[in-house]
Image (spheres, rainbow, N blue to C red):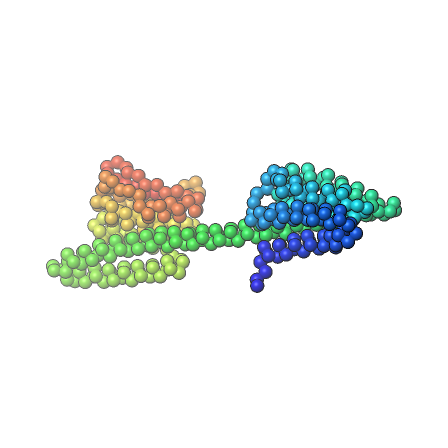
Length: 367
């Protein structure tokens, strides 16, 4: 059987509770007569039934609250026998307040628990000192006080360790679920951003090849060859997404965008500032060019497009402007993915209509 933190804590608490009181109970029953038997018969269940109910609640992570009936019953069962037992037998019962302290710390709010701790320590010290010979009064009082504090805080500590262990396990589970969710979002975003452009290019070149095959077989053959090349790139993109990385660059993606736009009949102008930026920034800008180009091909009647970059106040600004914007164009998953990428770098993405039926797509990230 595997020893879990919870089972270990229960075992330690049972060992402390039984170990502290078993010899005391035996002595009281043997020497106390009917009074001792009656007191023990009432006090033991009166103390230990709410004791283990409180321990179970604390192990489940129940929040501390105000005084409960159970704690009041335990307090009576812990201190009353000390005064009721005949002769000096009440001294054997001083282990009960030590166990009670652990419950006080676990089940009461901190100010109230500390308020109970002070009188309990004073009473324990005075009582332990009173039963010792004069030369050992202080020493016995310190011993009794240490006994109270060590027992009480041991019970408190093992229960809190179990609760913290459960919270850490829950946190690990939540972190694992969050990591899975982030990975799903990454795959979804990369597939949309990467395959969207590739599939648009494949559809475009397939359509061109179909139109050219009757009147210009050579040109149609060239388009089909490029279609095959784009399809192979798309397959490689899928493998890279599955492996968890993408090797993209702004310069390479701009060249690819120019080829796609010009094949679509859109004239393309570029104005790229010389950049020395971290790889994450370069990749984010490359993704922006890919998504912007895909949207121009899919969602506009553009005849011209410009791609430019600039550096201003420590930030890189990418602008992609085209004409022929359609009246309605809802933000898709690609734009959402780019906003997430930019936000992760402390940047932003915007898309807006401009004059003369134009459309401007912008990404700005720290350089």
